[in-house]
Length: 141
Image (cartoon, rainbow, N blue to C red; front, side, top):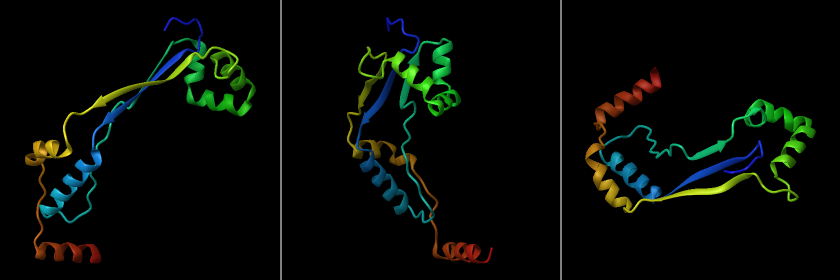
């Protein structure tokens, strides 16, 4: 970014277009059908959901520091001056770009992904006696 402002920054957010809810229900149902009766959580975490790039200098280091930013907001005047300098108000050019999106589309249906990973999913089944023993253990332990 060709900008002389010390508080210039660029933030990008990642968006993934895929039916995660459909895949979640398929994986959850399949593991339950294998006999798993304990608690079950199925999630698909997204790594590096956002990226923020800024020029390293004394002013941006102060602004990007969480503790310093809180102190600036508590005292109001430094926060107001830094926001005006950065261009957060309508009277100056904006030096903080935050509307950039990285869009990924997964060109597979949830059933296709599930069929590809089904052989890697497993859960030990429970017999009635094992379930009764576990119930007694939870009650008396």
